[in-house]
Length: 550
Image (cartoon, rainbow, N blue to C red):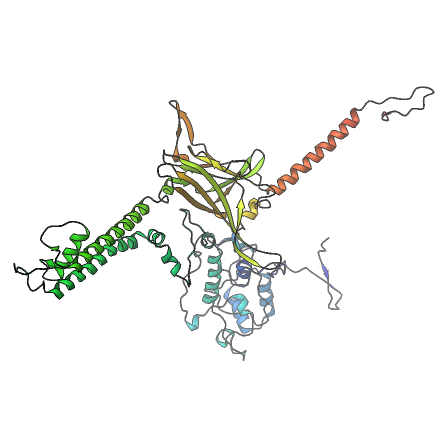
């Protein structure tokens, strides 16, 4: 019960009319963590032209006479009138003077917290610009403290210290509003992926000390190189051998004097028609690539020339075998086959057979099918153990039907893969509301044997919590046309909304068990009512099976 008048405790014994209602103090509850929205309550509000931005009615600015009384500092009536009136706590051009050192700050309205623009910087937040010292503006709560400069408070105050300018305070509040805007929140949620949508693992290996291990498997090292480096290594293997053997040919011809006796019919040359390094390089290329134009050649007049030609032929054959093999494997790698294996962009959660299920869709664009295709899923989520150990990016398995064989696919048409959320699922306690606060990533791995080459192919993708649609289902994309099944891949990504409870699978199971318990109790009650009753006859002491109602 609210009394219309309150007893005066000052000893006068009279009854005083109640004060005008004041807004709630903007104190942060101790059980909550201070956020940017809580901090907004302690910053000045912008001027608003409508009452929908706050719970207090918007009133016009007081007349200039009242402000003059406040500047002279003295008038209690003007101070009381200003305390009782609800005014916006953002400075205007006409209000440049304070309310006095003893004036308490007005509480900000709660409605102004929701009046921010949906994206970017709010419209009422102007870019900060330097203001002149004579025209400095102060928010109302700043004018109520005793550290305002003398130029704004008058000559009656002896203390003067610097206070934050309203432009700085307003820019701070605008910055907080920008941080709480949906666009910034969406940008924050775009965190670093563990695996990209195209299947590339975003993990960089660094500070590897023993790099000699890569040279022990030189074939895999060359194949794993990027194409620009692979082509560079491919060309340099031939160019280096040509230059090395050409230099040896030129050195041999120069030491034996074949360079100076070119065209001499009486000179028995070891290497004919070599008069410089360029001609020796051409001899090296013609010998290794078995071109043989017939003008430059190695004769039988020297044994070192024959041995050098044999060595170059063997080295050239080895380089051909390794480089051609690397090029073939590089081109025919099954990684390129994974480009025609597609996944849906989103996961959906809905009911299937009265069970909450996490579903996504996979498809194969080629008519040559994958042999022995298998699919599995991993959940990547950081957690902290009961002992306080933090495990970053912990991997846990998601059951996609391993026990029933549903993980083995006959991938002829697009198929919807289902993960039943049961007691063994990590999503057992996850509801539609808690999904927005979670941070995890689901890695999907599809493996199979390429029918054309017999190599094992692996396709990967990932889904973050933002890419899971609660209460949706995939649209069918297959129909029967002209005696064959037709797949429409334009409907591969399409989903439609269905009625799905927002609670977790655990809550649904508990509700179902409660309904079953109530149903069994009701059945027992009705069985008890339908049980026949019999009254004892005269002289019979046998008790009836059930007391009959009177």
